[in-house]
Length: 252
Image (cartoon, rainbow, N blue to C red; front, side):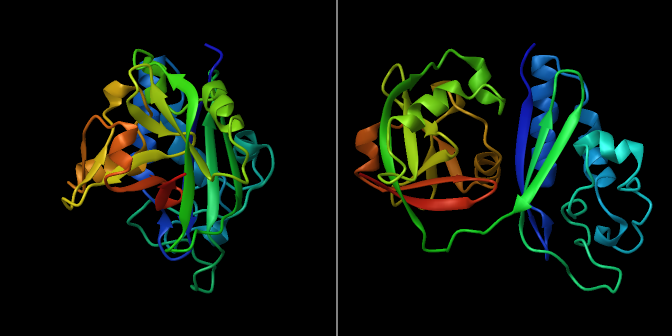
């Protein structure tokens, strides 16, 4: 199968990885569903990419030497610091003080079991950020099970995004063949209808099982409900993902 699986995570100096366990669990589920091997090595691959100074005290030695053959096989070059597991002590320099700035971590699992990790500085959005939303003419198919997995197969999202100039909207929302709301090109979709619980389209409409979406559903802060464009005019729209969190949206 010429397809890879992708997980995009955020790392915070004071908290480490955000939702790491959920990201690893989704990767494992998708790998099993698509018949890809190697997902069990994702956690070790992250630790193998760490320089010793980024590991919390007591964890030195858990990851491989960042210049070793094993570490170089993950990303081909020594990588920047990332954190240990969520819930553990965040990454610290040897002096014991938190280090680094927020990072965007992109993990990709290839069909041959190889794992690639890429990192870049990340600037979180302001709490009051608002994104302009447009609805695309491109449609998703509710019958396509691949939409539930975050893969390298992105052509439908790329096509939808290309419909709207970046100067006119920060995110583009896709519908399915029945006219039901599904998701954005890089985000899950939510609706605040005033009841105190967010509504989000069900997977059966044809969309990604987003990590932030999964967390909100699991904690009772959101429920699944079929939504249509007219519903967005009767409440407050939000889009979001695990990297950026929830962002208020305005349909334009």
